View 1 (cartoon, rainbow, N blue to C red):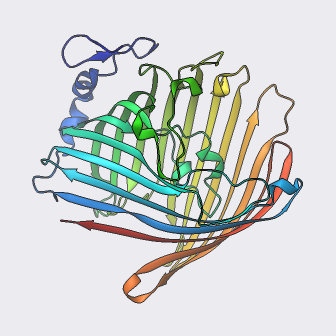
View 2: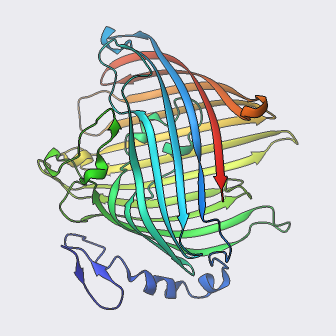
View 3: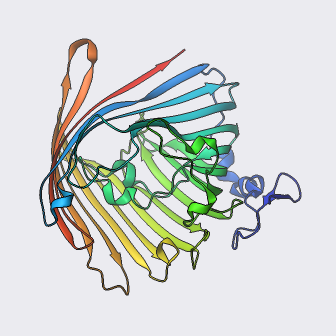
Length: 390
């Protein structure tokens, strides 16, 4: 149960090491000169409604595998609109919807445009008060970048496995600095502190439309699935960004996450993460973007074993062309199971299709070993970004 303390602070039973999530106001004050120097107030004029996101099609073919059950073929669509309703320059509502397959292919299944479900990955209200932003509702806690930015068709797969998404609770972001990153003002350096307290979403919003994935329930167990927000993250990020918000120079993130034990778990899971991104212009037309992320898990998934996960990726870009590779591993410590890993390569190109606009097309290959079984996968990925506001 949440209980009130002094001022605007809430505390949650079981949050060892985070007795007071909020004193976000106090932390902002301690940021002192840095926060005061940053001009991070919400703009006075904002669109009433803004929608952005992407429409993608992907086809995966496991062409060779040590177990015949793994030889699946799967063609599917992923549509992810992000909807912002601005009630004022400082208060807004946000929804991130996802349409994608909500079940895994059966053994050796050849599936095409089946089993798609629509669900809300994020759904929250947020207020921006100077350098402090507070969000209440359903959100994705900040913990790493690799699951979003690792390059190629299959570069994000292993990092997505330790994402903990669709959580209910309170999230706070304190902007410590947000100013020019160079003399020309082309880049921006943004330094932020990220805090969140949460539990799994087990409300009606954990369901999906069209193909039903079922309501997530407390009895399903799993770390982070508790009656009250007993899990939390604490992180710090330092990013060099361009005018579009993309990484344009050295950037790093450090984070700690505790997922409280759920039903059937023996331990809480604790994890520490370090993530680095960078972009370098090698010539006037050729650039190199890199990402490296490492995580150490204590009592992984609430069990007795510890684990590590690493993702390394690099992408060359020249004009409309992209060439990338990524390597990921997951190693369970003190366990007889072999190392899980994946090595990927992709080539892509942005294609302009008249009124449709720019579509990025990528061809990818992945070789991996998971649970002792090996597989070779080829795939194609097409994506079209969109945005609209009024």
